[in-house]
Image (tube, rainbow, N blue to C red; front, side):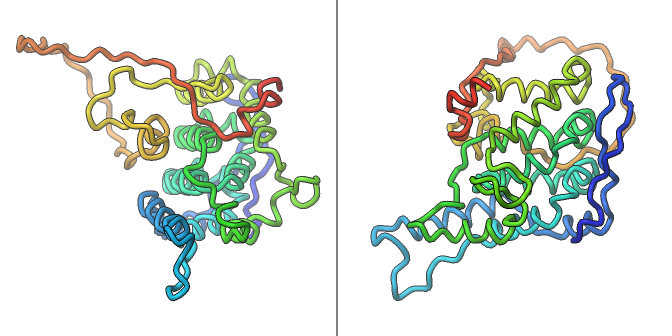
Length: 308
């Protein structure tokens, strides 16, 4: 996909009275392209774990008589897709027919690549406030923020013995976009913390409006939690809920950001009078949330980041 659909820089006045960037409508061809991608986070995770297992076997890697393990196809496809739609991600995040595909791309890529975290955050630069106040865009904004700061299950960008196939895939996909450590290269900053703080600075300017917005308040809360290094979890999770277990990506708060199918638009029904609780002796569990330390990437654990 060419950059012909690059986001515009128009500004719009919204209910809160603020003026901020609004992306163009998503391109129908790109939406069709996204909907045709075989995106599945569970399948991608299995492929990655199989790939990793081959190099952590007892003999130190794939046996010489066998074919070497192939880099996960799902992850390669995810990187290629993100690269091709980089300049359209903010637009596609606001479309009902593509927003969930964008979230899945974010979840897969950020789960196994530090470079992808920079790509995802920078792709939404200048549009954070609008996304936060949008019905679909706000979900993408929350997913992007939370997945970008979370520890990778395994960073395949630098996996292996120095001959990282993941690094080659990242270079092929994003090499022209990303800035090198010495400042050369593309326009995306080398520092993840800098990109994150720039995003939160955008939100900070409209914090008073976002704090009372039905969608914006959730994105604002996510950013505050990230800066505080904590997240809210259920004190007494129900059996089988997403808040059980220690794995960030398969359970817990991070897994809870994964959405199901969009609900059909229906007219709201008037709520009837609450029915009395049956006197069976069973008490409904009290809903209580507690704060827990957030597991974040090493860049965000430094004193330098905390003092910014």
